[in-house]
Image (cartoon, rainbow, N blue to C red):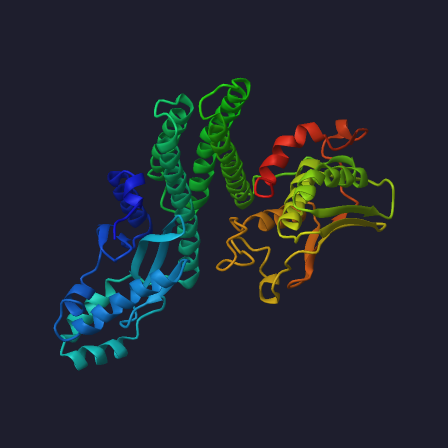
Length: 476
């Protein structure tokens, strides 16, 4: 079986990426195709397996079986996992899917997750007739890492694989479009050039990362900002091209071209939202996010945001309602952050709803706080996922439900923004019967800038149109 990944990334750049990860982590890493054939591996693989494993007649059959089990596990699981072989060596295995088809895997190992029990391994050496000192010395060359560090590496590789898959799938989509359209189309050429530049910048940025825990935050901060520029350029070019096509009524294959432009526009919104989320996560992790606290009529503000998404609800055959026990209530908050919170919750409530369902936005006032509830009649959240729904990269249904795609980071950002306001968010949900998300905000915050204390800010629909399109790209 071939490896599509090799068609979309320069082999030398893949080698540089693998070698860079090895230098930083001190743990060997390899890239393998779907059949387990090596594409490229870093230096540093220990002699333990070759000397006392696969190529040793005494234990070779067991090691070969172990390797087969490893690649069977990768094929059968669409998520990053830690695999421990029969000899107690651990690996992080990261499957890479192109268009929902298992294409390749990253294997990061070997390492131990706990200190060695020398007595146990001396017994194994005796059983197979190995020299005990030589056997134990080979084992001692293999690093021991904590489970927490292993989880951090898994989180890192999950994001890396998502970026690789996103870039590869986008380039695959380009190839299909190029088959249909004129090869000299200037707009598509610009997209391809920008994507190639982005790829080169991503790998260039990675090689500059220092060997420390801070490298993860720095890395994602850089690639997120590097992605934003070409994605915005591509999006703007698509808008201009669509305007030109709309004016030229006798354009050859006009309807087909419009269809492809719409597909590309929707996917550019998807990429912009992903990049925005990556940037927000990076800023939150680095504690760079601060609040611009101003006076805001929260009831009018929330009502206006609710009404602004009505057309998306209508498109999904979902009824939208707003209710408040007061007509007006001025509190101090950051309107942009509140808008981001509400748009995410409303997007989920509409997207995961059912035909002829409903979404209710309800505000209740207390003396010291205000509570906003977004209630839907959608698919609900399983009980075993409710405690972790606000954790990063947690999705309600990661395997069976491919109708709703996402990165699993939206609600974690929402929770962080609510907590920045010294508030809290919680939910009530029943599988198949809908969900209710509650946001409690304090009413005692103070305005950040004294010059703004006499102003009351509201919601500007026209200023928010593009943000609405980005947040609701997968609703319409």
